[in-house]
Image 1 (spheres, rainbow, N blue to C red):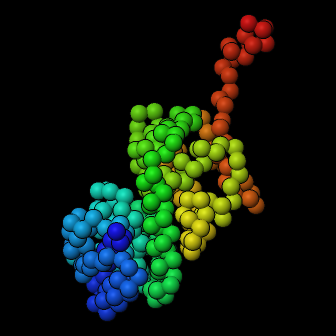
Image 2 (cartoon, rainbow, N blue to C red):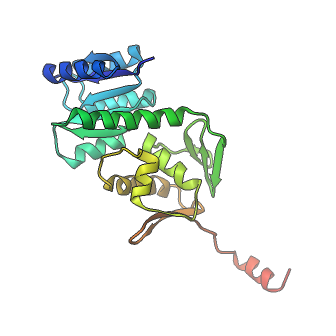
Length: 245
């Protein structure tokens, strides 16, 4: 079965060009010309991937991304003519899997689509280990959830994948390049600062819960490491240990 692609783009020339070339590549294509139409087509056509323009009438691309991400994990690549880093960061925060700035080559677009679709297929495979625990954190791999005690962390798909990758490998140092390869995919063409941004978001969200029994450490000149943290023994426990009791 060909992969189903939804193109949400208000510029008719770009929309028709993308549709034509995607069909030539063997994709099944549905198009939408504004944000409201995009949400409706996403719900009815159940695409495997959405190419979503940022600047749309009715609902802008960020709002469409927010709505669709609340309803599921369909991969989203945002198309933007704006160079603003703020817009890109907001898009990633809302759950976009990648973004590409206009004008772009079809070769670059297809490479990013291939990488995003491959990652989506990998995360749909049922993992051998259903759950990982570290300190107060529990990673539910089957349900793609992260829990602190009984509270669920509100994470974007990439935040969850990054945290799950680190939790399974505590104590190991990972460079930004390795994290990009393992979490975003070998063909990811974006900025390596993406890792720093996602680490910052994870620290902010985890930090709201106080001491968790681990911390994400920056290893200067190398990358990041997730360190288990042992709480110091209480005074009475230390005294008992010193007496050999």
